[in-house]
Length: 302
Image 1 (cartoon, one colour):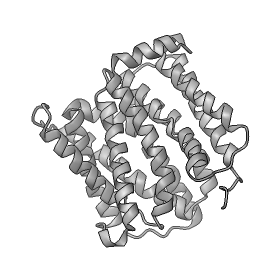
Image 2 (cartoon, one colour):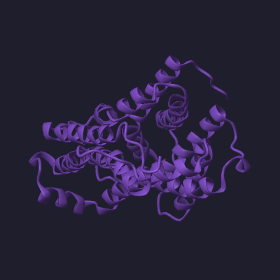
Image 3 (cartoon, one colour):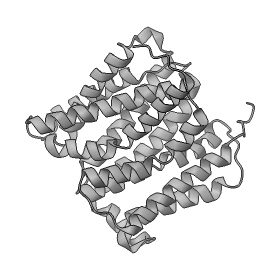
Image 4 (cartoon, one colour):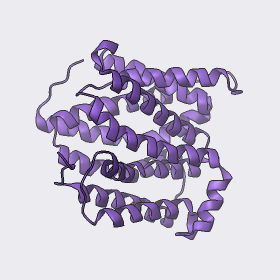
C-alpha cells in the first residue's frame, strides 16, 4: 500500500508510530504470559508479518541490495529475538519493565558507534550524555536503593539471561542503525525481516520444552493488537522519517522510554517506585544529550 501524505500528516504518522512503540514492552510481556516466551514471540511476529504485508506489500528479494539483505536481516532478527525473549523470560512484570529500559540504551550506543563506525562528529556534551544514560540504567536496575552497583549486580545475577539479552539487543540495534544506513539504498525490508524473525522463533519453539499453544478469546485479541501495533509502528515511522519533520520526530522518539514505562506500568498493573522513574528520566535525558551533541556536526568526510 502506497502512502503519500503531506508533511504535517507524515509528521503525525511518525508521532503515532512512537506512541505505538511505547506500548510494545507491556504488550509483549502480556502476550508471553498467555502463550509462553518463545511461542508468544513467534505468534507476535507472525501476526506482525501479516499486517506488514497488508500495509507495505509482499517483499521482493531482488529489490534489496545484497549487503543490506544479509547484514540487515541478521541484525534485525537478532535484535527482535533479544528484545522479545528478554521480556518473556523476565521473572515478573516489574523486571520486564526494567529490561525495557535496559533496551533503551540503544540511542546512546547508536551515537557512540556512529562516532566509531561512521566518523560522526560530536561536542563534549556526548560524554555526560553517555554517563547519565548508564547511571540511569543502574538507578533503574538497582531498585529502590537508587544508584547502587551492588544491588544492580545482584538483580542482574537473579536473571542473567534476560538482562544479557536486553543489553545485547541494545548493542545490536545500535549497530543496525549505523550499518544499514550504508547498505539500504533507501529500501525498507522490515516486512521481510519480520517474516525471518517469525521463522527463527518458530524453529526455536519447535526445539523448546514449552507446552502447546492454547488460544482464548482475550489472549488472541491481545496478540492481534500487539502484532498490529508493532507492524504499524514500523510502517508509519518509515513514512514519517521520509516525508515528515525529522527533527521533531527524532526529538520525540527519545521520550519513548517514558511513554513505554507509563503504558507498561498501567497495562501490567505494576506499581513503580520514585527511584525507578528517576532512572527513566536519566536515561531519557542522557539520550537527548547524546543526540544534541551530534546535531549539525556531519561525519568526517561527509
